[in-house]
Amino acid sequence: MLLLNENSDIEIIKKNYSCYSKLELLAKQISFLQQEASEIINDSKLNDKLHNIPMMSKKVPGKHYYHYMINNKDVLSIIAPDEWNTYDLFLGKYLYNFDGLFNKSKD
Image (cartoon, rainbow, N blue to C red; front, side, top):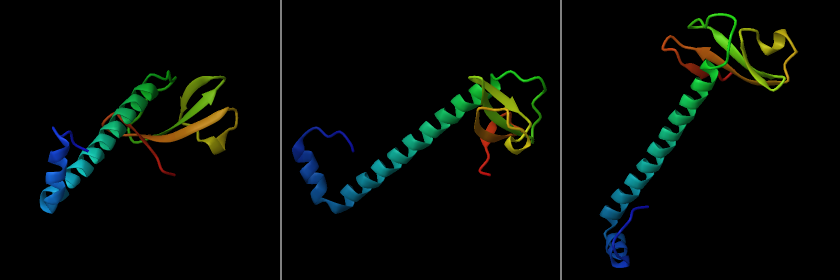
């Protein structure tokens, strides 16, 4: 949770329920913020990867793109998986937003 100087500090804080609950709440918030930061970093890495996949066409904001693995190469396409079957692995459907970021679609 938090680093304290001595074990006696921990015992003193545990006796004071109000302070202990505040520290416990802060610890939960810190954990939540760490998870949020981790998700942002992962999203950033994914966006970088998707942007670096060569395409024969221009990416258009507001359109969906499909990420495939074909012959051990990443492919980004406008063709949905149900429209063809020459891919080895379907990795996801992404909406290319007007802010220039890919967001994974839930459907």
